[in-house]
Amino acid sequence: MIFEDGEVVYGIEEERLSRRKHAANQFPKRSIRACLDDCGIELADVDEILLPYRPELLSKLLSSHVQNVVTNPSFFRRSAGEESSGSLLGNVATVTDTVDKYLGARSDELVELVEQRLANQFTGPVPPISTLSHHRCHAAGAYYPAAFEEGLVLTADGRGEYDSTVVWRAKNGELTRERTYEHPNSLGLLYGAATEFLGYRAFNGEGKIMGLAPYGEHNERIDRKLRSVVDGGVDYDVTEVTTGEIEDGVEKLEDMFGRSRKKEAGEYTDWEQDFAFTIQQFLEETVLDIVRAYLRKFSTSNVGLAGGVALNCKMNKRVMELDAVDDIYIQPVAHDGGLALGAGMLHQKKPLDMPTVYHGPSYSNNEIEETLEKNKLEYEQSDDIEREVAELLADGKLVGWFQGRLEMGPRALGNRSILADPRTEASRDRVNRYVKHREEWRPFAPSMLEEAADEYLENAEPSPFMIKTFDVRQEQKDDIEAVLHPADDTTRPQTVNENQNPRYYRLISEFESITGVPVVLNTSFNDHGEPIVTTPTEAIKDFYGMGLDALALGDWLLRKP
Image (tube, helix red, strand yellow):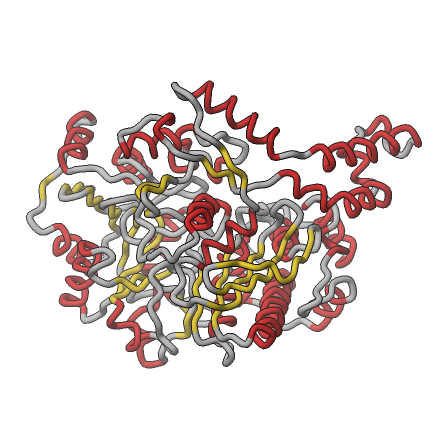
């Protein structure tokens, strides 16, 4: 992400360019180049580079991690090697390695490594590089775009440097750390272990477990057994499960419940649904207790949320509905993909208006037509693309919608979207089966006109980033069956106003003029397991590889026979 004069000018996640989901362990050379190219500059023209990580803070973990090495046999296997596991020499070597690792971590070494990589990838001198605390960057992303000047900011994820959950007091443009829950006391890691236990991958499938949870119900045996080893509340402690690696946590859950992990995702038993319900409920109740306690302590009614855990929309709903909360801001790019955004805000330390997250590349009609011609495709130019697509949707067609600048964050918000009629369950099932190639129990979300939110949602408020969940008014449920969670009839909407996205707003308005419903089903434009599409070529490839009926690229329209 690149800032100019305190404003975001361009941003894109590396995964959208490398085409590898989450771009784990990839140096972000493609996204850096994209930022520079958009601004028409070279790396040497940048004034300063900010890294949202401070390695020297790892030293705060030294005592807990030495204890892990001494008490957890799996640490020997992972660190010292199987052949020395359990031997006195091997144990001493592992402890020594751990001490060296945490005492030797320094920002200057990280900076030197990044400088070398940048020098190898780009020409000219490398600008000065500064390091910033991981969780402070998350907190900045939840504070500086918010409408409030003072409040509580809660950041929660798997781990930053040494911290997993942090309570911040936000006041007068400053963020003060009030309480730190140190790794491995991590809500993110607990949820990650549960995710892996249920057959999905940690740090990737947590949203699916959140979606599974409403199919379950309170199960006293599961709840009692879980709470026999973890404590909730403001002084929560989940380290019995989260000490070690994710794999260790999964093994502890297996031992605890006398069940093997699910080998692969798919259909779920009642017990598995109840387990998902229990983990989700534990997360919600713990976060609610922390929020209540520190709202009282700070004498405030304002809340900001960030970190990967803040992508849990069901949890966000519970926080929103607290009587003690008047205003809430949830960073839409809440996961680590938003750290660059928070780092830039932290550097500026001033309010930053953030009405959208359309920060990525866009493609002109001429560029799109060149791609269509190159691939010898049949297409037509539309004089009214919004009306034509609205008619297709009203007729039950599934449409790829590729317009304007690419969104940042995990949600498609009307520029790289797959759209469908929201009115029937059959529409939802068709998208799951023929387009997204995923489990049929998983729900979809709507985009709706902002002015219609009160008509459809209980306790409605603007929700432009699809990161809040709402109950739906009983009298409107039949109109939007495809975008209700089948188990609890909630929905996770994107509200759209004309200033945020004029073309998308007009499309939904045209759909309303045809059907009387100011809502469309909106899911991300990507096939199962891949990042959201970035380029016209990727959109075309997915169009022909999925069960889509039509594709709108700018003003150009492609149809299948």
